[in-house]
Image (tube, rainbow, N blue to C red):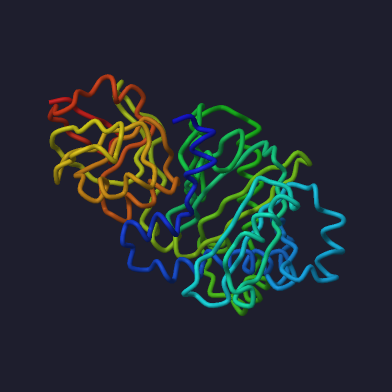
Length: 360
């Protein structure tokens, strides 16, 4: 399936991935995701952190075309945006549409069968032309992440034509997988904005349950984009993902064998390889090592049965990689030529810790 078609039809949120995988904290994660811009607003007010700051309305404002909404609509009708319908109670689903104009998104809104008094509506600005996009994690071990030239879904969905630049920082030394100086500059600038002085740390902790590490770094999972105005805009700050990945450590960004990749989930496993081109028509046995181009959400039942996972595409903080870690399945991503060099049924050893695959 072409990437454009996948992006149009198969871009579930991480909450949906975790729900499919049976993640025990799905409800808590849903609430964390729904409130991410509330936390980003606190950081904006406290330390000036720039983010994709939304215009906030009640869903009733949109339904009734209130004066407040009409005033905004007259200005922004043809601007690209995302429309997020955020439930006021945790048992209702979040609904969203993105990549279209506000006028087009309002048509979508009118088609939704919801109780508008149970939702609020955030109109989130989009540039449509992200220069760079990045995801990264700050925990007690350091900083780990990736950056790509282009739109941020390339990282969250693990779908990119050109590999991202991986990076890590042990609070002393930076390591990058490519010499892209512009990408390195944006990463260092974003990380520097999350070094919070002591007085402001107290203000932040008084408003939300945040933690700091290495004296002044705000722990968390982050996503940001660089828009054409040459500014960084954070689009996510998540504490639950950071807690889930608290043991992820900065590692070696280079591998020494031809059949190798980047560790998305640690561990070592041996077993028969199972090449999967269509997850809906594949009989994968418990313990088989799943080999595919990229795992989308319809691969989750196979991921749960697999002994390990190898993908030709993907990256270490994509939704699929995060789910692999939750399932505690060894996983390598970005293994070029895996579908050609590994034969279906061949016994292999997947050593995710070293990033290597051994053909037995």
